[in-house]
Structure formats: C-alpha cells, structure tokens
Image 1 (cartoon, protein in one colour):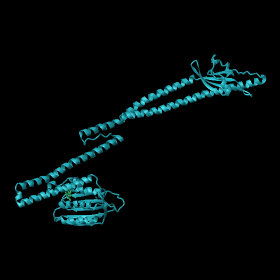
Image 2: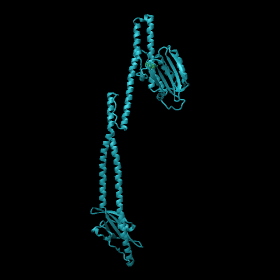
Image 3: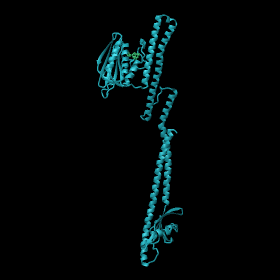
Amino acid sequence: MSVRISLTLWYTFLLGAILLSFSILLYLMLVLVLYQQVDQSLQERAQQIGNRIETETTFRLNEEQGGEVVLPPLDVFSTSAIFVQVINAEGKLIESTNNLGGHRLADDVDINAINETGQATFTTVTIENARIRVYTAPIVVGPPIQVLGAVQVGQSLQFIDMMLRMVLFFLTGGTIIALVVAALIGAFLARKALTPIDRINQTAAQIVSGQDLKQRLATPPTNDEISRLTTTINDMLARLDNFFQAQVRLSADVSHELRTPLTTIRGNIDLLRSGAANDPQELDEALTVIDGELDRMSRIVTDLLLLSQADAGISLRLEPVELDTIVLDVYRQARVIANGINIQLGHEDQAMVEGDADRLKQLLINLVTNAIKHTAEGGRITLSLYRDHDWVRVTVEDTGRGIAPTALPHIFERFYRADEAAGQKGTGLGLSIAQWIAQAHGGQITVESQLGQGSTFTLWLPNKLERKRKTTPVEILAVQD
Ligand code: ADP
C-alpha cells in the first residue's frame, strides 16, 4: 500500500473514531438527560396529586370510617401533555383526566405488586402509536397502613423521541459527510506533500539508470524536510561522484605508472635477448635499469598499499613520542643524502606529541626528500620545531625552485606531479601519504611557496600537553599573515 493511501486511511480512520465516540457520547447523554427529566417531572406531579388525595381521604376516613378514595379534580393537575388517572386497589379506573379521551394508561400495571411492595414504578406504554411514559405511585393511608389504589401520571414521549431521532440523523449524516470530506482533503494533502518525494524518486531512478552521478536533484526553495532531504541526497551524490572519479583516476594513474617501468623492463630484456647480454657493459647497464624500475614499481606498490589501508580507515597506534628526537634523526639522515645542499637545524623546541614514531619519521623524510629533490646544489634546507600553546609545528623550509600557484592546490593529490615535464622521477604519492599521516594524528600539512624562491612545508600536530585546542592551523596562518 502506498504511503499516500495509508496516510489518508489513517487520517480518515482516526477522525472517524473521534467523531463516532463524540456522537455516541452526545447521544447517550441526551437520552439520559431528557428521559430523566420526564421521569422526574412525572414523579413530582404524582407526588402532588398523591398528597392531596391522601390528605382528603384520611380526613374523610377519620370522619366516616369509609374505605373509598376521595379525589380532588384531576384536570387541575394535568396540562395538555400530562395525563392523570387514578385506580383503586383492584386496578379499576376511578377517574382520569379529559385529555386521555377515554383511553387508559398502563392497563397492565400489576396492582397486586403495588399492594405488596407499596413501591412506585415506571413503565412505557404505547397508545395509538405514541409512546407514553407512565409513573404509577400508590395511594397509602394510615396508620394502619393501607394501600387504597394508585395515581398514574403519564407524559407523551413523542416529542423527545422525534428530537432524538433528528439528533441521531444529523450526527450520523454529519459524521459520514465529515469522513468523506476528510478523506478527500487527506488524499489531496498527502498527494501534495508526497509529490516532491515522487519527483526525487524519479530523478534518483534516472540517475541510477543513466549512471550519471553528475546529475543533481532540483532543490525546492522552501526550507523544509523535503529541501533538506534533497540537499542531503545532492551532497551524497557529490561525494559519490568524487569518490567514483577518484577511483577511476586512481586506476588510470596506477596502470599508467606501472606500465612505464614494465615497458622499460621489457625493452631492456629484448635488448639483452638480441645480443646485449654478451657485452658485459651493456648487460650491466640493462640490469641496472631493470633494477631501478623494479625498485620504483615496488615503491609504488608499497605506497599504494599504505594509502589503501588509510582509505580503509585503519587508525594508527598513538603513543607519547619525542618529536625533537625524530626531527634530529631526520636531519641526520638528510645530511647523508644532501647532494651538496646545506641542511641545517633552525629553531628547536622540545615537544612530546601523541603519535606513531615510524610514520612521523616517514612523513618528515618525505618532506625533506622532496625539498632535496627540488633544491639545486648550494641551496639550503632548514628544519625547525616550534611548540606553541595549541600546536606543535615542524617546518621544512627550502630555497628550491618553489611551486607554481596553479599547482599548489593539487600537490597533495595522489599521483599529482607538478613538474612532470621537468623529468622528475617521483611517484606523486609522497605528499598524499604525508598528509594522510598528519591527519591520522589530528593534524595537517600546510604549504607556502614562491616560485623560484623556495617552499615551506609545515606539519601541524596537536600539542597534547595543553588540554584543549582553541584554534585551527588555518586560523593561526591567517594571524601570521
Ligand atoms: P613526488 O613523488 O612526485 O615527489 P609528491 O606527492 O611528494 O610526489 O609531490 C608532488 C609534487 O609536489 C611533486 O611532483 C613536486 O612537483 C611538488 N613538490 C613537492 N615538494 C616540493 C618542494 N619542496 N619544492 C618544489 N616542489 C615540490
């Protein structure tokens, strides 16, 4: 069952239940109150008449010692709607009001029961199709107690019955009309509310069938649940699209990266097969090339493995680490591969951070190797360590050739190489790995660079000695600017 139909049905059902309970309650209350009122007024009237009869009869009884019932003129008590009759102890009619027109009220009243119990009773009789409520009250004199007969007072229920029938008719009719109108309005409202969802559904189905993750849902200008849902789905599509693009790019890049060394290795093997193997020098050259390419391939594969672990969300084991010791280690290692570049230590604070010592070292070595790669002989690379209130920073500053502003936003992307044309032999994965390590430590790497002047890479790590960080690396950069 569609949401639209079930919403409408629920809405109508609930309204129906409320209206029905309300109508039943109202009707029952009316019945109770109206009939009770009739009974009460009959009782009062009977009381009045009974009292008069009893007083007059007792008076006479005392005087004459006779047994007959003495009646006041009954028509004094009746109105056009009230009928009165008096019966004796045998049930025989003694007197009745004129408005009864010869009819008798409650023929079937068991006078014996009245004699025995002396209790008044209510009955409802039908005379000429009109229901009449009759109250029978015994006439008692004494002492000694003697039931002389009964006064019967009746009132037609015709008007009340008709009124109740009308109320019932209006309540039933009103409930049915209200339910039909409610169902129509409910269906209309549900349709109106769900149409945007239908539209979202259709577009989403189109996106799935067309496999076009670039397509977006039209966001309604309202700020309601639907527009928020659309925005969320659009964000999700954008992320999926990015992820999908990245996957496509990555597999293209990986195949490209691995094809080059494979082609070179195949070329050298062909060369060896065609006779170069007989010449020791050519053999040595070919093997060196093959060795180098295999090295490169295994580096790419190791890096990719590491990045795929990062993608899988593997977290690092963080322990307290002396960062200044790591910086010193990296400095020593850098001096070995310095290639005629002046490597020096700058500002050196002492700092403990929560981290993975091996990964942090790998990160700094990546930064320093890059700096060495892009700095000419005679240049200078400075390693510094600063401990601020919120952050511990390691900077690797070089006087190399710098990075073009157009390349700067991309250097942390996988397989991105700003200087491919320059024939550099990097894999383009070093900085993405470094950035991942920094982020896994709750920090990040930022870069400032001037083409032809040099670059400064800064690793930001949270200063765990301080309780709480109040700024972000970017904010600090802005303050420094
Ligand atoms: P690669 O293996 O190519 O070095 P990276 O991810 O480490 O890959 O670096 C990406 C690109 O960033 C490099 O190709 C290079 O152009 C640029 N780059 C990185 N570090 C420096 C630096 N210190 N000076 C100039 N360019 C740099």
